[in-house]
Length: 72
Image (cartoon, rainbow, N blue to C red; front, top):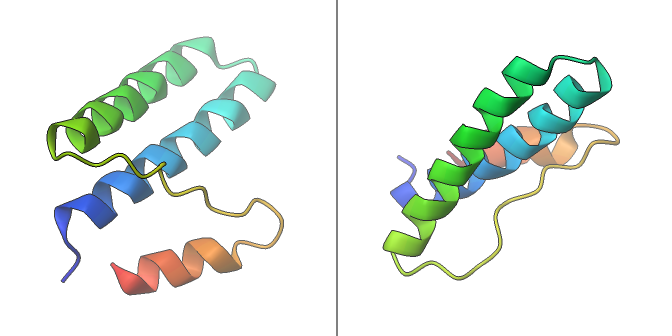
């Protein structure tokens, strides 16, 4: 079972990736909501004394994301 820190890192990174996709597709409202998710994940990480940067899945082949999901 994944720990909270791993989940927070994954959610923050995935939300940031989805924000970029929404911006490219001109989906401003959805991008805004995803920015809130990313912000909450960052706040949660700070609350747990996590200074490590959020997980950033690779956009080129999805392999890193699949590995991260498997780890969760």
